[in-house]
Amino acid sequence: MAQQTVTATRVLSKLLVLNQVQREGRVNMATKKTSSAKSTAGVERVRNLILGFVGLLVVGFVVTTFYLGTGLSQNSVPEAGSDYAVIADVTVANPVRRLTVEEYFSYACVHCKNFDPTLEDWLTTLPEDVNFNRVPTAFSRAWGVLAQGYFALEKANALDSHHQQMFKAIHNGGRVFSNGEAIADYLDSPDLPAADFMRAFDSRDVMRKLNRAEQATRRTGIEAVPTMVVAGKYRVGMDNGAERALQVVDYLLEQERVLMQGEAP
Image (cartoon, rainbow, N blue to C red):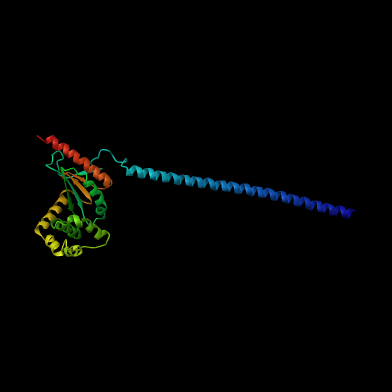
């Protein structure tokens, strides 16, 4: 009887231990589930914060792009120093005899190539009282060859049909024109024989224009291209974008027009 009692007691003890283990297991499982849920919730919160931050960045980028693209970030009235510079040794108050706009450029300049279509569109709106000219710059010997080539095309009455071709040859085709013969060979066609181009290229008229262009580049303080010069008084760069530069040119032309009218008898 005593033996049976001991056995029963042992069995009961084992059952109690097993029951305790099961309860602890369930508690541990619940704790793990709670911890896992908390961890998942934390990850979800972090993910939402990141997505929200990225969303704000995207919205900010879109708004900024619209703001800059529409010109809303630019002053309505151009200011000297930020939108244009007054050329040294020029008396702004003196009216000019004729309104002029010059683009200082080079075929070697990719920014000039990219600006050219915008400039051409703007030229279609240019008033009749404004005279426009391009002035090729010669910051190096290689650029000097291209500047001379520009004036040669002009003298040969072939500029309109070959202006864009020169840009594309250099920046799209990777061509390097180290002398006049290289340009002549590339442009050689029934409309512009190489001999005719070289005759213009080596002419005294072209050399005189090239010298005058180099002097004008120094006088106006051109250090980068493309740059616009208005009425021989104002230098307008591209730091604020091409569209803004042309807006500034229009503004300066109007200022000069008013000054000319004020001096009229």
